[in-house]
Image (cartoon, rainbow, N blue to C red; front, side, top):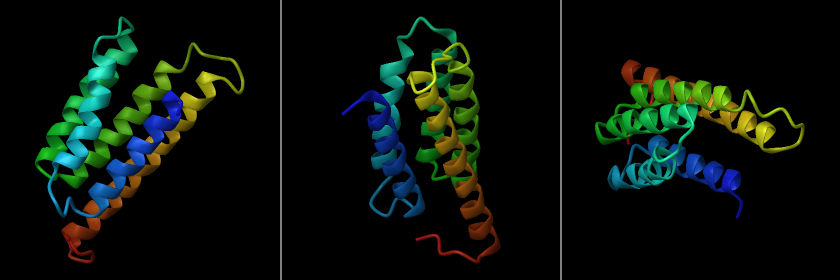
Length: 127
């Protein structure tokens, strides 16, 4: 499995756990985020370190089961991820995959914001 596919799988697993309201416990989401935070925190690239820092923020939201905070953090991760791909211009290469990943993060963040608003309004079950 390549790195980008592995990230996408982690995002899907994390989103599924969030959407289910962490029925078992929050460790499912926290483990996904911690793995990526560890992998990225040792980078010498400032943009990648910013992503690692935001992953730490996301982990705090997961721990508190703060869906609105998670949505905002996903969207910030989308921006940071997109910015890290700016110098990568090869079409069909890693830069395009990172930009695609950014779009998925943004979409997941937007969906989480909707879930948070629905829960706040009492129109969606909190699980």
